[in-house]
Length: 150
Image (cartoon, rainbow, N blue to C red):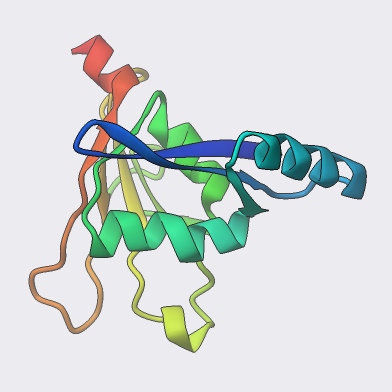
């Protein structure tokens, strides 16, 4: 199932600071509707790739924001441009998602997101390591589906 649109809400110290509506492959008319709806509410609207590059990665990596969602493996897989099974484990147990193409020089060392499935309701998520960094930041992901199943 492909991403059509999504919503990201950014909170700081418990207060909503910004809302971003992002979209991917939608018709021009749908994009205009999404943009108009967002503008009416004072939200930003942007394409998925721009959202990942300008909002998600800077918040989750540089600012070390906590990424919270219900069924995060599903949602994050819709933001990914590529994926691969993790090496040395069964292909169904762990995946690495790439949020930006590796062939872009400015993103060559951007980590992917590793999803390690424990069972049908629980998963562990973290950023992958990057070449040249010994102690890479692994991220802070809270999957509410996993939390509810605990």
